[in-house]
Length: 459
Picture 1 (cartoon, one colour):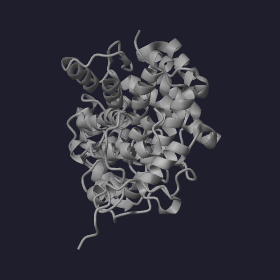
Picture 2: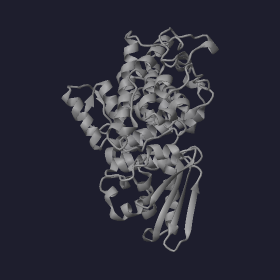
Picture 3: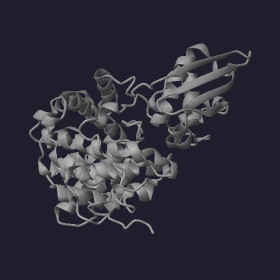
Picture 4: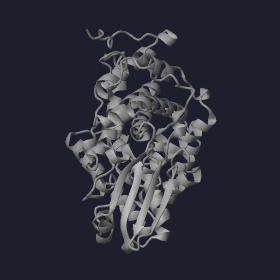
């Protein structure tokens, strides 16, 4: 007979005997900003700045306007800031819109090992709730780090298994980290943080079949909104399973096929996974970036019209998640290694404008794209090799061990600031962009996170 389900028992806080749900809740409740190393805090602020930039840029995307229109039609009126817009919404509505906008360009940070986008939903939810509750910058930063570590540590074990079952790990797992981050911000106790995880888990979803459509960004929007709802429900006394990560009916077993009662989260507070995350230089799926880097290097030695074959050695995850052979839209092109490599070989660069509806239809790029094949070669998504065969039979290749932006080849703080200004200035202007950089650099000193929300709006 199968083991009895234990998902609904109360949390066991007895140290090593604690289940995974209790372990994550205890970490979230107990950690303070003073406990967190300075390098970790600085990395978090760099990622929050990047989030602000990609969300401002994403605010101009059609999917963002569609979400605002839908919320307005549903009479979702409130005073919470929608980034890059004059419009406002309820706290939950603003979290939804901003969480989706942050992922609209697929330009937001990612954690390669667990294959998740950690900041997009989390920062959106915390900004909406923090603005409403007049939270301090210190509270916002501590809650951001807690939420990020929760979904990142979960993803190290069940992120890739979720992909192989057709789920989008970001859509599933960031529901949990975002809910706990918001729970931290509103000061839930351990018992309610455990229940908060249960409420979030029963809403968690996201399918790989949505890649190349607006629904991929809806995954991060829903994670933000559902994370807010989960924490507020727990605060109001709403019940949910307090052992949702444990037992044979827990989320890891049911959705990812994991063995019941895996020892999840044992390195919480000792291994800060945010330090192993990546800020993107390209507005496309992170699993493509190493191949883009290799193609850009090769472009110096290759004339596209003389190319007969392009072989890309990439990871199995890249092939599974980013191999749309005939992308017809800008959104689909972000998940086509074939297209991204052909475009980079042609131009010697990979700007955000390459991943638009118009750019994807360029005849010369599509001709070269038809010559690109993908080979399952590497374990990591941040590693790739591109080999080009020319019409005279000669070959040339480039190997990239760590994609630009990934832990082995990170974006510097200066790189991130440059990216932020490129994305933010067209929306809020240079003066306001400088104001946002200053606020986030001194985030711990901000008395009211609402000031940052206002700086990111159109006044």
